[in-house]
Image (cartoon, rainbow, N blue to C red):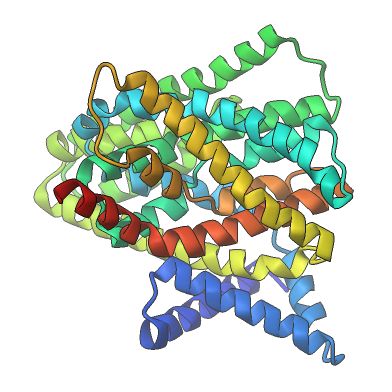
Length: 414
C-alpha cells in the first residue's frame, strides 16, 4: 500500500465512523470515533480466531503506519497551534502559577511517583521492570494530552477559569513531558551517562530555548501578517509557521511543542487583534478548526485500532488495570501539592483538586511515546499499561468530567 492509499483509507474510515457516531450514538466525536474503532478492532480479532485473515491484514496495515512519527512529527504541531490560537493570554496570565507548577514540577514529581509505584507493585503480579523502565512509563503517562483535553472540554461546559487552567496546563506539560521522557530514554539506552547538571542543562535548553524560539518565530510571523491584507496569504503563512517552525525547532534540539504553543498564543492574541482584518480572522479560525477536526478524527480512529498491535495477555491487562489508580493517585497528589502551595496567596473554587485530577486526560501522545521505546518485554508491558490508562481516561473520565464539574458547582451553590 502506498502512503497516499493509507491516508485515503484512514480518511474514509474516519468519515464513515464519524457518520455512524453522529447518526446513531451522539457521543463526543473523539470518544465516539475511538470507541467504534476499538470495537471494530475487537471484531477483527474475533474474526481472526476463525481464520479469516482479517486481523492479520489489519495488523500489517497498522505496522506500516509509524504512529509515533505520524503524531509527534506530523499532527501534533497542528493540534497545539489550533488549541493555542483560541486561548486568551490575559486569562492564561491569571492562572500562570498554577499552570507552571503543574506543567513542570507536577510532571517531574508525577514521573517519579508513578515510576516508583509501578516498580514496587508489578512484582505482585509476577511482572518485573527496572526502576528506569518504571520511570519511563511515569514520564510518558504523566503529561495530560492537549488533543484529548481540548476536544472534550468543548463539550463539557466547564467554567472559564477552570477551562483555562486545564487547557493551559495540557498545552505546556506535554512539551515538558517529552523532554523528561527523552532524557530518561537516553539514560536507559546508554546513549550517555548524564549527571544531574547535564539533565538540568538539557531540560532548560529544551524548554526555555523552545519558548524563546516560539516567541521569535511568532513575532516574525506577526510582523509579516501586519504587512498584508489577504486571507489566503495569511492562512498560508500560519501553516508555514506551524510546519516550518516545528521542524526547525526539532532540528535545533529545542522543544518543538512548546515553541508552537508560544507562537500560537502570540498569533492568537496580538496577531488576531492587531494584524488581521475581520475577514482574515473568520477564515483563519475556520481553517484551523477544520484541520483540527479532521486530524482529531484520524488520530482517535488510530488509537482505537492500535489494540491490534498490543499484547492482551492476562498479566499485562491486570498491570494495565493496576496502572489506572496509580496514575490517578499521582495526578491527585501533584495537583493537590501545587494548589496547597498557592492557597496562601489566592483562592480556588470548591473541588478544584478533584476536578483537575479527573480532567487530566491522557491520549495519543502517551501511546506515541510508548511506541518509541526499544523493542523488548518491557516495551510490550509498558504499551499495554499505557493503552489501558488512555482508554479509561478518554472514555470514563472524558464522558463524566461534565458531571463532576456540575456536582461541585451544585455543592458550592447549596
